[in-house]
Amino acid sequence: MDQKELNKLKQEINQYKHLMGKQRAEHVKYYINYVRENYGDKGVKKVKDTIEKMGFDIGDAKQYRDTEWVPESWAHIFFVTAARIFDWDDREIQNIGRYIMPRSIITRVFLKYFSTVEKTLKKGVKQWDNNFTRGELEIKDINKEKKEGKFMLKNFPNNPMAYVHFQGYFSRLLEIITGSNKVKVEDPVCLDQDKGNWEWKFHW
Image (cartoon, rainbow, N blue to C red; front, side, top):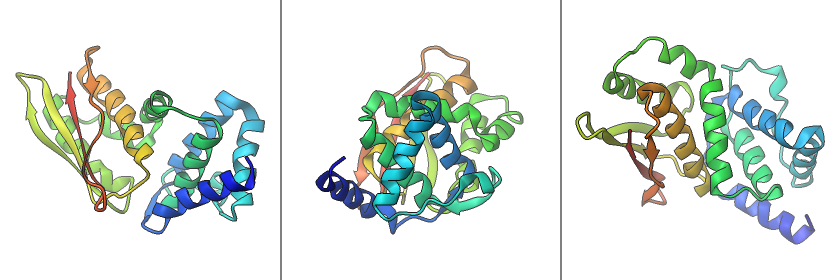
Protein backbone atom coordinates (compact mmCIF):
# COMPACT_ATOMS: atom_id res chain seq x y z
CA MET A 1 0.00 0.00 0.00
CA ASP A 2 1.60 3.27 -1.14
CA GLN A 3 1.33 6.60 0.71
CA LYS A 4 -1.60 7.80 -1.39
CA GLU A 5 -3.61 4.66 -0.60
CA LEU A 6 -2.58 4.90 3.05
CA ASN A 7 -3.83 8.47 3.29
CA LYS A 8 -7.12 7.50 1.65
CA LEU A 9 -7.59 4.62 4.12
CA LYS A 10 -6.80 6.88 7.07
CA GLN A 11 -9.38 9.37 5.87
CA GLU A 12 -11.96 6.60 5.51
CA ILE A 13 -11.33 5.42 9.08
CA ASN A 14 -11.38 8.92 10.53
CA GLN A 15 -14.73 9.70 8.91
CA TYR A 16 -16.57 7.72 11.62
CA LYS A 17 -13.93 7.10 14.29
CA HIS A 18 -14.75 10.23 16.29
CA LEU A 19 -18.44 9.20 16.60
CA MET A 20 -17.74 5.91 18.28
CA GLY A 21 -18.34 4.80 21.85
CA LYS A 22 -17.35 1.49 23.39
CA GLN A 23 -17.98 -2.18 22.69
CA ARG A 24 -16.93 -5.51 24.10
CA ALA A 25 -13.34 -6.63 23.64
CA GLU A 26 -14.46 -9.89 22.05
CA HIS A 27 -15.35 -8.06 18.83
CA VAL A 28 -11.83 -6.97 17.93
CA LYS A 29 -10.53 -10.40 18.95
CA TYR A 30 -12.87 -12.07 16.46
CA TYR A 31 -11.60 -9.91 13.61
CA ILE A 32 -7.99 -10.66 14.53
CA ASN A 33 -8.74 -14.38 14.77
CA TYR A 34 -10.54 -14.36 11.42
CA VAL A 35 -7.55 -12.78 9.70
CA ARG A 36 -5.19 -15.20 11.44
CA GLU A 37 -7.24 -18.25 10.38
CA ASN A 38 -7.47 -17.09 6.77
CA TYR A 39 -4.19 -15.22 6.19
CA GLY A 40 -1.94 -16.49 8.98
CA ASP A 41 0.16 -14.54 11.48
CA LYS A 42 1.76 -12.67 8.56
CA GLY A 43 -1.69 -11.37 7.63
CA VAL A 44 -2.32 -10.12 11.17
CA LYS A 45 1.10 -8.45 11.21
CA LYS A 46 0.42 -6.79 7.87
CA VAL A 47 -2.81 -5.27 9.20
CA LYS A 48 -1.23 -4.13 12.47
CA ASP A 49 1.81 -2.67 10.69
CA THR A 50 -0.49 -0.71 8.38
CA ILE A 51 -2.47 0.57 11.36
CA GLU A 52 0.76 1.70 13.00
CA LYS A 53 1.87 3.50 9.83
CA MET A 54 -1.38 5.50 9.94
CA GLY A 55 -0.66 6.50 13.55
CA PHE A 56 -3.62 4.63 15.07
CA ASP A 57 -3.63 2.63 18.29
CA ILE A 58 -5.86 -0.42 18.80
CA GLY A 59 -4.44 -1.47 22.16
CA ASP A 60 -3.71 -5.10 22.99
CA ALA A 61 -6.98 -7.06 22.97
CA LYS A 62 -5.31 -10.06 24.61
CA GLN A 63 -5.01 -8.08 27.85
CA TYR A 64 -8.78 -7.68 28.10
CA ARG A 65 -11.54 -10.12 29.02
CA ASP A 66 -13.97 -10.82 26.17
CA THR A 67 -16.79 -9.00 27.96
CA GLU A 68 -14.70 -6.00 29.00
CA TRP A 69 -15.55 -2.61 27.47
CA VAL A 70 -12.94 -1.19 25.08
CA PRO A 71 -13.04 1.66 22.51
CA GLU A 72 -15.31 0.73 19.60
CA SER A 73 -12.77 2.36 17.31
CA TRP A 74 -10.33 -0.53 17.87
CA ALA A 75 -12.54 -3.01 16.03
CA HIS A 76 -13.47 -0.36 13.44
CA ILE A 77 -9.83 0.42 12.63
CA PHE A 78 -8.79 -3.21 12.37
CA PHE A 79 -11.85 -4.25 10.35
CA VAL A 80 -11.69 -1.43 7.78
CA THR A 81 -7.91 -1.78 7.39
CA ALA A 82 -8.15 -5.55 6.87
CA ALA A 83 -11.02 -5.13 4.42
CA ARG A 84 -8.97 -2.80 2.24
CA ILE A 85 -5.74 -4.79 2.48
CA PHE A 86 -7.39 -8.10 1.55
CA ASP A 87 -9.93 -6.54 -0.82
CA TRP A 88 -13.00 -8.05 0.85
CA ASP A 89 -16.21 -7.87 -1.16
CA ASP A 90 -19.74 -7.80 0.30
CA ARG A 91 -19.99 -11.58 0.34
CA GLU A 92 -16.80 -11.90 2.39
CA ILE A 93 -17.92 -9.16 4.79
CA GLN A 94 -21.24 -10.96 5.31
CA ASN A 95 -19.40 -14.22 5.93
CA ILE A 96 -17.36 -12.55 8.66
CA GLY A 97 -20.61 -11.55 10.36
CA ARG A 98 -21.77 -15.17 10.13
CA TYR A 99 -18.41 -16.32 11.50
CA ILE A 100 -18.62 -14.05 14.54
CA MET A 101 -22.25 -14.60 15.54
CA PRO A 102 -22.05 -18.12 17.09
CA ARG A 103 -18.74 -17.29 18.78
CA SER A 104 -20.10 -14.37 20.80
CA ILE A 105 -20.21 -15.25 24.50
CA ILE A 106 -23.00 -12.77 25.19
CA THR A 107 -25.15 -14.11 22.34
CA ARG A 108 -24.57 -17.77 23.24
CA VAL A 109 -25.62 -17.19 26.84
CA PHE A 110 -28.69 -15.24 25.76
CA LEU A 111 -29.93 -17.88 23.29
CA LYS A 112 -30.17 -20.50 26.04
CA TYR A 113 -33.08 -18.77 27.72
CA PHE A 114 -35.72 -18.14 25.04
CA SER A 115 -37.52 -20.70 22.91
CA THR A 116 -40.09 -19.02 20.61
CA VAL A 117 -38.94 -17.11 17.53
CA GLU A 118 -40.87 -13.92 18.29
CA LYS A 119 -39.87 -13.79 21.95
CA THR A 120 -36.24 -14.54 21.15
CA LEU A 121 -36.03 -11.86 18.47
CA LYS A 122 -37.68 -9.18 20.60
CA LYS A 123 -35.54 -10.00 23.61
CA GLY A 124 -32.51 -10.40 21.40
CA VAL A 125 -32.51 -6.87 20.08
CA LYS A 126 -32.39 -5.65 23.69
CA GLN A 127 -28.99 -7.32 23.93
CA TRP A 128 -27.61 -4.58 21.68
CA ASP A 129 -26.86 -2.49 24.77
CA ASN A 130 -24.75 -5.36 26.09
CA ASN A 131 -22.47 -5.02 23.06
CA PHE A 132 -22.41 -1.31 22.19
CA THR A 133 -22.75 1.95 24.12
CA ARG A 134 -24.50 3.67 21.23
CA GLY A 135 -27.26 2.89 18.75
CA GLU A 136 -30.63 1.19 19.18
CA LEU A 137 -31.68 -2.05 17.49
CA GLU A 138 -35.38 -2.83 17.06
CA ILE A 139 -37.62 -5.47 15.51
CA LYS A 140 -40.39 -4.15 13.27
CA ASP A 141 -43.36 -5.66 11.41
CA ILE A 142 -42.74 -9.22 12.55
CA ASN A 143 -45.31 -11.60 11.09
CA LYS A 144 -45.22 -15.21 12.26
CA GLU A 145 -47.64 -16.40 9.58
CA LYS A 146 -45.69 -14.86 6.72
CA LYS A 147 -42.39 -15.54 8.53
CA GLU A 148 -41.01 -12.10 7.92
CA GLY A 149 -39.98 -8.93 9.72
CA LYS A 150 -37.42 -6.14 9.85
CA PHE A 151 -34.35 -5.30 11.87
CA MET A 152 -34.01 -1.54 12.35
CA LEU A 153 -30.83 0.07 13.64
CA LYS A 154 -30.94 3.73 14.69
CA ASN A 155 -28.33 6.30 15.67
CA PHE A 156 -25.35 4.18 14.61
CA PRO A 157 -23.40 6.10 11.93
CA ASN A 158 -20.64 3.90 10.62
CA ASN A 159 -18.71 2.79 7.55
CA PRO A 160 -21.22 1.29 5.06
CA MET A 161 -19.35 -2.02 5.30
CA ALA A 162 -20.58 -2.35 8.89
CA TYR A 163 -24.20 -2.71 7.76
CA VAL A 164 -23.27 -5.43 5.26
CA HIS A 165 -21.40 -7.12 8.11
CA PHE A 166 -24.53 -7.00 10.30
CA GLN A 167 -26.50 -8.53 7.43
CA GLY A 168 -24.38 -11.68 7.75
CA TYR A 169 -24.59 -11.61 11.55
CA PHE A 170 -28.40 -11.31 11.53
CA SER A 171 -28.67 -14.07 8.94
CA ARG A 172 -26.78 -16.57 11.07
CA LEU A 173 -28.68 -15.48 14.19
CA LEU A 174 -32.02 -16.12 12.47
CA GLU A 175 -30.87 -19.54 11.25
CA ILE A 176 -30.04 -20.55 14.80
CA ILE A 177 -33.25 -19.11 16.29
CA THR A 178 -35.65 -20.48 13.65
CA GLY A 179 -33.86 -23.67 12.63
CA SER A 180 -34.80 -22.78 9.05
CA ASN A 181 -32.59 -23.24 6.00
CA LYS A 182 -34.67 -20.67 4.12
CA VAL A 183 -33.48 -17.62 6.03
CA LYS A 184 -32.85 -14.56 3.91
CA VAL A 185 -31.79 -11.17 5.23
CA GLU A 186 -32.07 -8.62 2.46
CA ASP A 187 -29.44 -6.00 1.68
CA PRO A 188 -29.33 -3.10 4.15
CA VAL A 189 -31.45 -0.07 3.27
CA CYS A 190 -30.28 3.37 4.39
CA LEU A 191 -33.03 5.45 6.00
CA ASP A 192 -30.80 8.32 7.15
CA GLN A 193 -27.07 8.32 6.39
CA ASP A 194 -26.16 11.12 8.79
CA LYS A 195 -28.02 9.64 11.75
CA GLY A 196 -26.94 6.10 10.91
CA ASN A 197 -30.47 4.69 10.56
CA TRP A 198 -30.66 1.45 8.55
CA GLU A 199 -33.01 -1.49 8.16
CA TRP A 200 -32.88 -5.09 6.95
CA LYS A 201 -35.97 -7.02 5.85
CA PHE A 202 -35.82 -10.70 6.67
CA HIS A 203 -37.68 -13.93 5.94
CA TRP A 204 -37.36 -17.44 7.36
